[in-house]
Length: 99
Image (cartoon, rainbow, N blue to C red):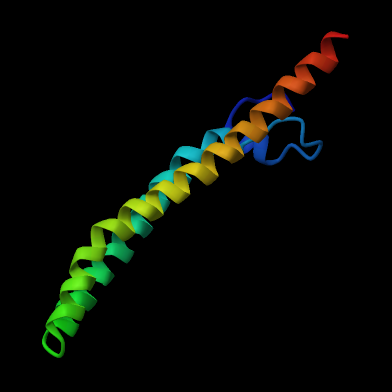
């Protein structure tokens, strides 16, 4: 199946084509949305706990952007490692075909 589309690669049962490089940008967007929701949850929890303990609530509020940054950084590092692995596999298969 030489179709270059995503669905063509999806139903390639010989696994000669990789779809990971095509969907990695969408996975990164999803991870950023997840990080934003988590940071907003941390922010909301900080505001909620501020009525019981001011310093605990302030800590939660100040941790929200740090949580967002660390989650996005972690997602980026993992996805870059995944992309590097698949590019190594693609380049290795190209080198094998040239022999």
